Length: 298
Image 1 (cartoon, helix red, strand yellow):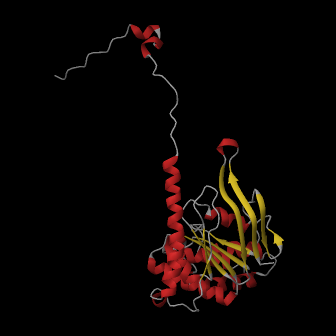
Image 2: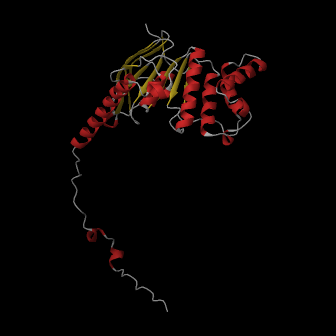
Image 3: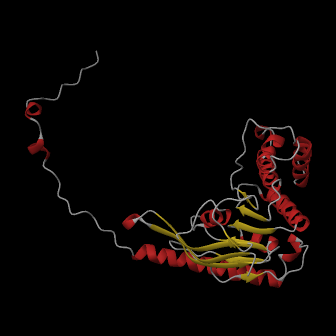
C-alpha cells in the first residue's frame, strides 16, 4: 500500500438538477517522501482536492487513505498551507506561528513551545521579523509566516494549495527553494497544487494534470527524471525539460479545447413568454393622472 491513496473518489455539490460534479473517479498513489505536483486551470477542483486530503471535506464516494488509515477529519499529521496567508493581523509573526504550536503541543512547557516556534521561523528565514505584524511584512514574508505556522506542527504530509500564486516571480523562486530545502531536511511527503507547469517541473518528482470539469479527473502523469538539486536556469535549456513541459501543456490545452467545444454546443432555451399589455393592468386611480409640465427656470 502506498503512503497516500485516493481510491475512486467522487465529490459534488448541490442536489437534484442543481448538483454539480466537481471531481470524478480520482485514483492516486503517493509514496512516502515523494513530492507531487498537481496542475490544472482555475475552477477545476484543485482546492477541493486539497480539502479532501486535509480532511476538511469528505468524499461522496471512494476513500482517501493516509498511512494506512482512512481520512475522516483534520489531523496535525497533514499540514495545509492556504493560497491566502490566513494570518491574524493583530498578531506578530511569532504569535501567528504560536497558534498552531499552542494547539498541538499544549502539554509541553512554555520553553519547549517557544523553541518549536523559533525553529519554524528560522526554517523560513524570518528570524529578524519575529516581532513584526503582517501589516509590516511583504507578501513573500507573509506567505513564509504561513508556511512556518504549518511547519511548526511537524506534519508528515505538507499540502500546498497554490501558496505562491500571488507572489512576484523573484519572491516566488526564493520560496520555492526554501520549500525544497525544508522537504529535504524534514523528509516530508509534499503535494503541491499549482497552475504553473514550470514550477511543478522544477520542484516535483511527478506532475499530474487535472482535466477540466465538471467531473474533473486526473490526466496522464509525467515523471520528472531530472537529478537534484536542480538549477532552474540550466534545466529549462535541457531537451528533457522541454519535452516534459510540452506533454503537460498539450494535455491542458486539449482539455481547454474540449471545454470550448462543449460550451459552443450547448443550446440556449429562451422562456416561452409573451409581452404584457401594461394598459390593461393599470389601477383605476392611475388612468386619470397626467404628467406634470416641467417647471421652466426663470
